[in-house]
Amino acid sequence: MHEISIARAVLRMVEDIIPTGGHVKALRLRAGAARALEPEALEFAWQVTCLDSAAAGSKLNLTVDPWALRCRKCGRQFQSDDWQTSCICGGAAELRAADDELILEEIDLVSPPGQHRSVVQGRE
Amino acid sequence: MKVPVVDNVLKLNDEIAQSNRAMLRASHVFCIDLLGGPGCGKTTLLEATLAKFANELRVGVCVGDLATTRDADRLDRHAVQAVQINTGRSCHLDANQVKQALTHLPLADLDLLIIENVGNLICPVGFDLGQDVKVGMFSLTEGDDKAAKHPSIVTACDLMLLNKMDLAPHLTFDREQFRDEVGRLHPGLRLIELSSTDPNDAGFVHWLNWVRTAVQSQATLV
Image (cartoon, rainbow over all chains, first blue to last red):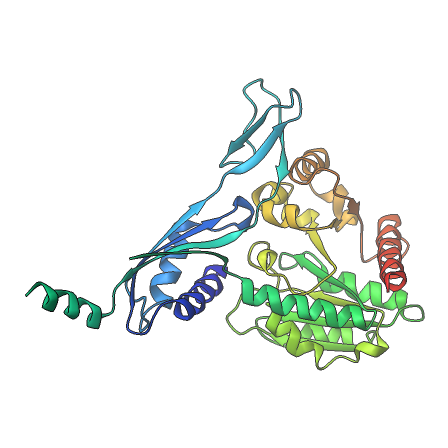
């Protein structure tokens, strides 16, 4: 359920950034593993949240970073999507750091209609 | 046209949380955000804690629930002031709700503010409220796999409580496994096993001492 709050925060941010008349085609977000976000759940929340906005129908692409782990037996540092993954030496791993970042990295915009028209007219 | 942004999505929440934190610090109020699943014993722990601190610390409470004022009613007897936040459909508190709640609390007359978050092991974890520490709570009746299944609450909290230890003889809860998993998720995290229904329980006394020490450290900070 926290996906709805996150989606609203993303929309607020997007609306602050995009120019008047601009329409959002896609967004790129990155989250740390500790943020506990499911890409599918966030995408669903996004589709509901962005209705009637300049981002309606846009695709939200979320990348979730893996957990940063350290083997308790041999000390090897590695990454995994599952924090319980054992080291190749068989040792149990512990977390090195819990990354809970949530970053909007990029907005893919369709230019405002006015700009489109001027380009077409220029060609003529 | 691709526009690079690279900015924190929860910036607005985090800014309000920072201003809450500044307001609490200015009034010398130590703030705990208490997180745990529904029924793990958060309100019962607070009732027992407030009763113990009645003549020692001035405690305000802010409780988040989707509906009802039952928790605030339960805690109002012992607290200087208990404020209920009804979140409606939301599964967690955010900094702005706490900011509103702070206006109903006599901060100058408080030593400690405890925010009892909405009973949920996932959603409240990622929202900074302006607290000094997050305290996570599990209980024996929830099962020994809950830390492993909800890693974020373990990584985020500054103290972990395992409640309902009095029920241990009646349950199969692998405490070794639970401790090991908490330790792997958050190396060095302090874990207190307690029974909040027994005022003389050793773990409960440890918890009270932990709170006392934390409040004193805040009081001497300023």
